[in-house]
Image (cartoon, rainbow, N blue to C red; front, side, top):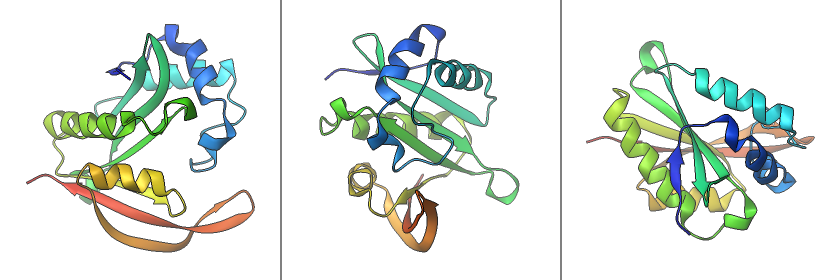
Length: 167
């Protein structure tokens, strides 16, 4: 499936709602990613994404003119200002097609080129093996496990930290 990373725009709101409104996505996301995902959530997210400054890059993953996922980089501050955290999601209909691996690779290249960073990291819920495979395929190395660091849905789980360092 062909896709492109695009700036978020209001015309993607309807397809964002359709793609994001699936409980399977939210189970491995931070609580800021709502479920159910409403048109108001989409409008608020797109407005926030468009207002981000130079320390953030938020892109829609667009296939056939529709938002099927999202990906973002957030640069940290202070002594961590040369690092950025990556986060991403993809609608289940597009899982297993190599889209996220390609999108993560593109976003990392963009981040290293444009953001004055040397390290991109991801903190993944440990049960999310598919996300860990995406990161490994993109050259990220496992840095460690944080025990019981996530509390979601009334239960604890570990998280794992992966990083990609610019040579």
